[in-house]
Amino acid sequence: MSNAALQIPVRFDELGVLLPDLPDFDLAQTLDCGQAFRWEEQMDGSFIGIAHKRRCRISREGDGVRLWEVSRTAFEQVWYSYFDLGRDYAALKRSFSSDPALARAVAYAPGIRVLRQEPWEALCSFIISQNNHVKRIKGIIARFCELLGEPAEGGGFAFPEPETVAACSPDDLAPLRAGFRARYLVDAAQKVVSGQVDLQACCSMPVDEARAMLTRITGVGIKVADCALLYGCGRVECFPIDVWMRRVMEHLYPDGLPDCVSGYEGIAQQYLFHYARTTGLGTV
Image (cartoon, rainbow, N blue to C red; front, side, top):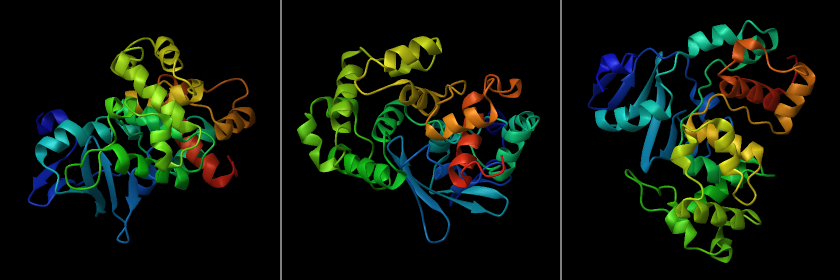
């Protein structure tokens, strides 16, 4: 992948990768807004996380973003897609802002991006997220990776492979302190390994079929399926509805979403969700 193909300014140097002009990417708004659970903010404002079996430290550098000790190959093969760097968020925000409520949500957190996570990790993460809060979700996922994950490149542990989880019983996952969710994780792994659920196919098949396939898993309803599709499969047309988004829809969009979000409902949802969760709907 050439710099021209990347379509954003990129500088590769001895420190890693620098994206010198990237205003539409706020690290805290993106990495700590409830869409991913393996990123931790450091004292210096940088974030360290693990994805795709690799550890990454990322920080702001002037008007840009620095990925430390990341090779050109890793950036082009993993992080470019993971951080959704090929999408024009400025254009999306201009479109969304034709709706007054969305304009306020976008202005509140203009640096949100929707991450493209591994489908299996996203599925498990949102199974774990059910009736749970972010701190506990992060703890369960950290223990899950320490218990069953292989060492990650650069340190820490990769997310456990479905084959490893499928060989476990719910009792084997007791150290996670995940409660009823342990049974759901094992069932998800067994269905993925057996081929009853094809996560790669979910990335391209008609979205209704993909949703139906995911809900074959015990404990996976429409909301968890839509989260897996949005955050793991890049299906930005999916619009997960939890308690916060139900309030948003009832309060702001009783007749449905505005036309300006068509095809990108999931990205619009992230702005609305973050605003609603952090302000309690406030002045939207």
